[in-house]
Each structure stands twice: as structure tokens, then as C-alpha cells.
Length: 369
Ligand code: G3I
Image (cartoon, rainbow, N blue to C red; front, side, top):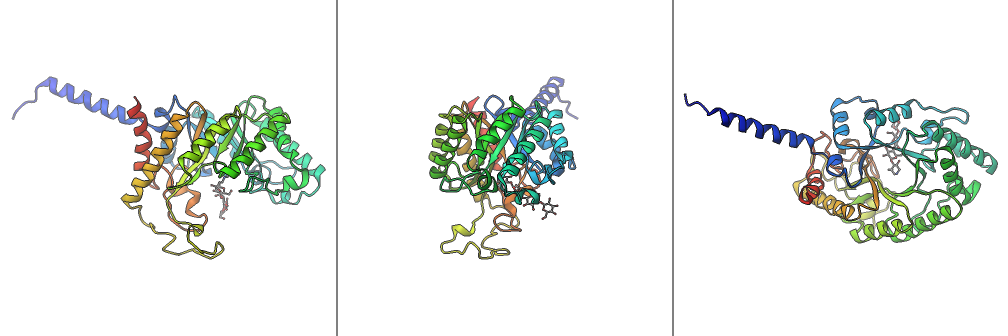
């Protein structure tokens, strides 16, 4: 039997170790650690570490977290005189244990309100609610939650103010009041205005006017959260870049707070389709029920690569990029706008394997080294 020379064994072993350790150290958060936080949105089960494999992926790949749902007012403030911090305590503890940047989502949002809040019609009662709600929640996590979505989705698509229960009862002043209350409760927390489609020109103009007005009236706005619920072919890189530049020119940070890229058609993409038309069960609207074809995987990878290339170009203006979910299986896009579809919007698939999109995002950093 031919004996392998001892030194060859050593070299081979060293090579194997270095490759393995290299593979193990590569992750989104490590690759971008000198650029911006790489975050994800955690479900209740992930916050409670119900799946060890998911938990290991979260801790390996991400250094910032947002609670996808459990910190919305219907959960944290279910009744007028009752707060429920059980899950938000676990969320904050998870972030502290894993030394992650912890983002609070969200204080003032017209959706997912507790039923009792929907009934507030009187301005005095609404003022009392906002003061109590924001002060209680932000003070509770003072010095522990690093940033907040103080106000979420206050605008219509044309840039005008959404006729929310807050605007109807308090007028525009609710906006600056919310930011002032949050600053008073935790002066060190970074305070964001968060919204979707504010990379589109009309809504961007509305968001810029809103942020300027809050600042002029003495509110502390540290950043804008561009949610980033995008598509394979829109919005254009030009609009995204224009938004980064225009928001940054306000002297605030830019965060991409809920990034995902749908690969499925939507009713409004269909010419003449009636939005209210029921599409559940339509094969046309759910074209990839079992797996995503390579051709679309490649398109998704190219789209993420082009977006992250732009983010790196403006990394000095960007504080955080958070994916809206850890993996495809948990994405809200499997059930919106049509229930029961199979979407593929994130860098990890439903079995927690990384996709070509993940590799394309990482590759940008490798070529940069
Ligand atoms: O918790 C209940 C559960 O008890 C019940 O059995 C189940 C079935 O009805 O519903 C569960 O609540 C769901 C909740 O997600 C938690 O899973 C709600 O129905 C569902 O509407 C809710 O959807 C969330 C949506 O916000 C509305 O709050 C999505 O998961 C979440 O991804 C989505 O995230 C929003 C951001 O907060 C703001 N920006 C837009 C983004 C997408 O809509």
C-alpha cells in the first residue's frame, strides 16, 4: 500500500480547515460590517427561539432586528389601561443577548390598532392616548431599543397626509407631537419616519415635506425608513438613488427597513384586471407553487446585486438594510395581496438554504476586497 508523505497530510488538513473556517466566517453581517447594519424581521416563534436552525441562521447572518408584528399597538397596548410587554421583553432580551441593533416597530400606525384605539374620536382623548402610549413604551426600553419607527405610513400615494384616526382627531400636529414625546422618553434613541413607496417621486416629495415640517416644529427626526417592498423591475435604480440623495440632504440617515422583492404577478399588473377580482387559487397568479425556475432565481440575484451595489455606493448615507423576514417561508408576500401563494422574495429559501441572491449580495464585498 502506497503511503502518503506526512507533510502532504498536514497541508491538506490546513487547506481543509482554512476553507471550512472561511466558509463559516462568511455572512451578510460580517461582509457588510464596515458599511451598514444587515437586519431581519423576527416572527414571534423566532423571538422565542422555537427553531434552532432558524436561530442559528439569524445569529450568523444578521446584526440588527425588528419585530415583524409583536410590537404593534394591538399587541403592546391591547386595552386603554393595559400594556402587554411579554413578547417585546423577549424581543429586546434576544437582541441584547446576541449584541444586535434593536429597532422598535412601531409607535404610531393607523393599521393593527387595538379595537379601543379605533374608537377614539375626541382630540383630548387622542392627545392623552399618544402621550401615555409613547411615553410608557419608549421609557420602558430606554437605552435598550436603539431606534424607533415613531410614525409609520402617514402618507397617501400622492404625498398628501393619510386620513388616519390620528390626523382626524389631532390634525397635522400629531406628527411632531409623536416625535417630541419619543425624544422626551428616550433622548438617545434614533427616531425614524417609516413608509413604503417613498422612493417614488410624489410620495417622496410628501415625505420630505413631512420630515422638514416635523424638524422645523422642533421634532427630532434622525432618519427615514424606506421600506423597500420592491419588484424585479421597479422601482428604478435612478429613483432609489435620487431618494437616498434627497433624504440624506435633509441631514438624516437613510435606512431600508423592510426589504423584499416579489417575483409574482399582482392583479394591478394585469391590464384591465379588477383589483377586487378574486384571484385566490389562480395558477396564473401563482406560477411557481413548487419551486422557482433558475431563470427567475437569476433575475432575483441580479436585482439584489444591482440594489446592493447602489447601497454600497452610498454606504456613508445608509445606516441599516433590514430584510422583511428571515426566509421565504415566513414572508407576508405568500399571503398578500393574494392568500396562499408561494413567493420567493428573500435571500434564504423556505428550507433556510441561501439562494443565488444571497451569493450575489456577498460577491459584491468579495470583489471589493
Ligand atoms: O396573530 C394572529 C393569529 O393569532 C391568527 O391565528 C392569524 C390568522 O388570522 O393571524 C395572526 O395575525 C396576523 C399577523 O400578521 C401575525 O402573523 C395578521 O392576521 C396579519 O394581518 C399580520 O400581517 C402582518 C402585516 O404587517 C399586518 O400587520 C405581516 O405579518 C407583516 O409582515 C406586515 O408588515 C408590515 C409592516 O408592519 C409595515 N409595513 C408594511 C408591512 C407589510 O404589510
